[in-house]
Length: 336
Image (tube, rainbow, N blue to C red; front, top):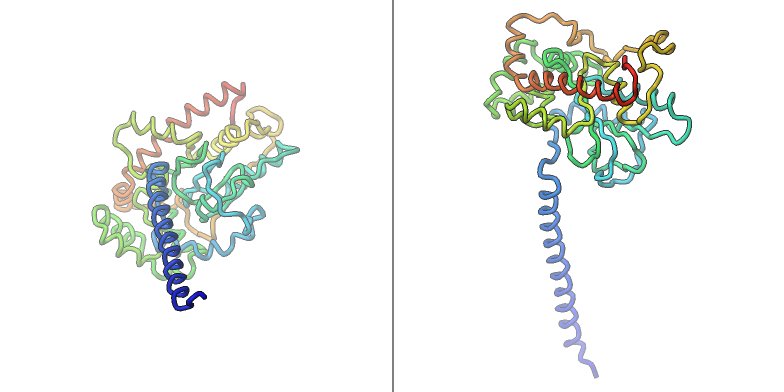
């Protein structure tokens, strides 16, 4: 006869033993996963600051209006993502996305590649099988096979960031936190080597304009032109200047798809008759970076907080000229 007083303690001990083994296994796997991530991704994308996340919270709620947004997309890794466009805020990312979609529609009759704009969703939440060209406001990652981006004149870019926060519809609820342009620039100049001040500037509920574009593509330049050019050339299939918008979009599309839209070829009938839709998404802003007249003092402060972005913009123009010539030689065309 089995004594129940003996069975129950033994069963409890056995159950506790199983739980201990499972817990130990989970700990070991977690440590292995951390070590593995450090090996395969030593330079992970940087997360947005708390106030930048807040800035885009309303924007995230509107993502369903984009026809390619798939709320049921599986959360998968993006190691096999073919084409990745880094949409740096205030560099006309929505316009570029729309033009790429139009070009796909005009050049592919069948088996059209799927272009998707996941906005602020992290890449690891992307189903790469459904998306052949991904646009997202995330920083550089070495996982995608080909990466593209567009760099804007730093002075215009900083001004555009300010007026987005002060005037745009998306930032309407937080515009009251924005000071004058001079006060905002001065606050970020003081935060150049002072992270305590930078944290204090979160009260503006706005962007951190300190070398914003460099932080998305490189983190920090090496202050060595040859090394910086080599790194950027290795990282990007195309890194293009904002100021040559139409040509930049054409080169990006040709490199991505291997096809040449008629509107991208100089002297073609379609190019002669085209009227490119250059109405960029203005988000309801009245003042724009390229047209707003700044004072010498404001220009001086902008220069102080964009030293690396100025170099990045210079390198972008050099690399783009090289890529443009390569594209024209390979396809035997003159890109407009």
